[in-house]
Length: 255
Ligand SMILES: [Mn+2]
Image (tube, rainbow, N blue to C red; front, side, top):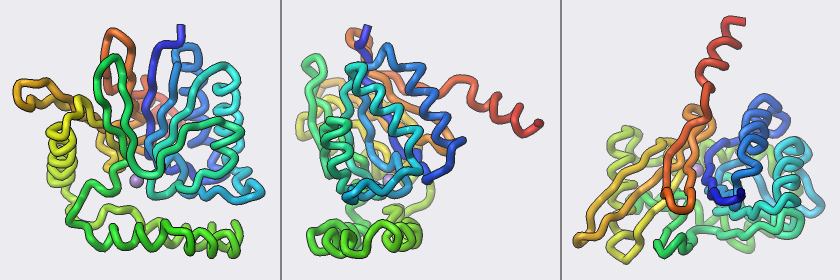
């Protein structure tokens, strides 16, 4: 039965990196029958911009799998990250995805859920906030379209390093604290659950706000942790990991 909502983010997939894509493709295949909705919380791709015509053949194995899921009845929702934005007609029309450029809100069995990639969580990172505004506006999009995919991909590779949005503390504890503070702010606004990504640190934590039980989740990444968040009706949220990943990797290394 299709009952699960799966939340994934931060694979930072590179075009033509088949090994990296295969891992996600196999995971999606495994979950195909359980999945009602697939929520991508940004930075699935190291770089995506919705060029016309379509300019990312290197992502074909994953895109084929996403198309297959959609045909099978899975709904895709996409929260743009700092590496994938202006998702374009491919995501809107071919994948019929529901896209949010920054944040989104949903109701799951009566719980108010807040969703965002998380690159704007650190309010002290003014440099990044300005950078984001310069990058994500109509004029820049016009320039990107004019420059075309070939030039833009080269520039994007350079900008990736600048646009990580990780300016500020590099210490995981400090980063976690900033994410918690942001989550608490949203909980005080009335949200029961806050789901973020971007910091690549999978986590589930409960808080109590005015006697109300609230939860913060970070879906983690598909670079180091191979983690995701599952919501199953009647059972709630669980942070999960791709099973056996470490062992398979170790075996491969041993050859
Ligand atoms: Mn990110």
